[in-house]
Length: 223
Image (cartoon, rainbow, N blue to C red):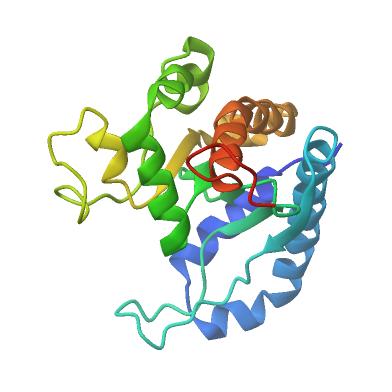
């Protein structure tokens, strides 16, 4: 079973301290070695996911930063990250995994819903948010994922009542969950299993959101 090594975390720490092109060029071969380890690890996460979900694409993000529009001109990311996209129009939501010393985490949910999808979601909460509340308040779910996160408006979106009982959900622009891990947890041989159990636990939320986004407000299929 593929796992993250202490050497990989140490390389990322060294990169954070020496985030310049000269150092990276001198250590490019070492980076390539750790990149192989990381690719194998993400592949094992993907293999686990595909046992209970359908993943269309694994995307590993490049180590190189786009600094054109950033105040931070450091050329490299001092972390590894990747996302897993679910397959087909019926399966909504996505998974994310970042490996960074002291700041590793997984995430799941909806990072940037399209305008039409966001309106459909908000209309659902306006009509009935009880099923969402039930999922979020389940002890097993909360123990793994905690509370719903994501950017939100300060007040109600246009056309919605700011006093609506589900306004906490209606004003959201993102619907995200995150779970952080210590370096000790990342290095554990059971880390891939922990990730997979977490991703599996998000399924009730994904099922609800997928149902919403593939039907109209009358519950009629759009597919």
